[in-house]
Image (cartoon, rainbow over all chains, first blue to last red):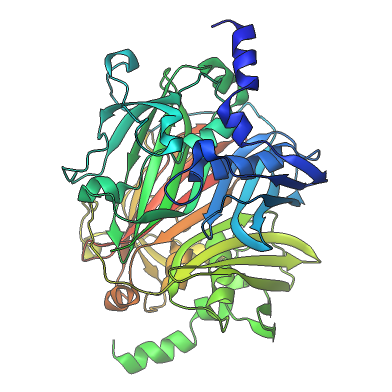
Length: 275
Length: 275
């Protein structure tokens, strides 16, 4: 794929269409949830997370790049237009602290805190072991088009733990190669969204698709912009796993790895499930 | 220890003293950072997390118990009095979404989002394996009194990965039994604090105590109130581990287990380090 092709595709990419914001004032934007990324009841949480991040990235006072984001899903987002309100809460040398509200009909439907900061060269280490998986080319692409809209926007190759509503998985582990179905170079917005691309683990653990929804999602971005640029449009390797489910909630952690075995981002979430 | 003794001790416990808040108006409180939990530059982050939670727990509209909390440490908290502002952002059937600001001199020093909700009996599972460790009684108590004030408030027994500034640890793993030095029955405030009681992993990984600070901390509370009550004043088992350090930041995850091998809470944080 040539650079010209990538740029042309990116300009017309459904993900960028979904994240389109209209600036009303500094830090105030209007947008509409995209039907292209619709889930069962409301937009896919990953796209909501990316939308909240985009408000910060478009703010003129933003320096550096995303480091840590927490998104709280407070209520179902409806298909109606929303207002995004971005506030720089505290501006420091190493970090900027942002808060973002997504409001519909004057009520908060989702909010986020985001820490951004400039890039620094430091000591580095990676105690975590990259997952062992078959090469992406050796894993068949999962037929996701028949499912929800957002799922069909991604090309997923399940090395382990594919969605299967007949068999309960004791571990709840999924390992999959993942990229946009329509090629798009990797960036922080894409990572923020892909961090939520692994279904609630309760589906796997129980082998049924019961009512469940992410309540709170935190993502830590370890990769620098040049590492994301180097990944380009090639698939990344993700692994998702829960620790425990009790009293209507379970946790789950996701690691997103480059194909060069570098940990790009890690996310953690609390998931509500019905019973 | 008899119930009467526990109650008498709890009333005079340094942790409860540190969390004392004076109500100014509904959801508005005043407090002073406690010197009893002072760290190198500012109060111990765990006590700040518990203070932010306490503001919500004291709010008359609060239902249920803490489920997920994210605390952002925006700037060094000074020894001066602070104002805590608690807002119920969205009130739903299964969850309440709260935001909390800790302000000093009109500027936000720390903030939090907290999800609370009523208890429900549901399907449950624990795919995560409890750590294997020696019994608490077989592990010597670490001599923490010579170090920072907050550290001496805890009784820590390091089964693995004790603070040691001479040896670098490749994994950055610590496994330790942990409780308040002065006995205090376990509750959500204590868990919120203990979730941050494991030093920045960069200390272990490099074998030096270099400048480092938590930037953002998320804790998911899986245990019900009766499970915490059953744990009482006995030590809990914690395990802390980083995944990767790059560009001045590393992640670290903490699991907090009951002595009955039930996962009580899990926390994740992003840590800033200097170089």
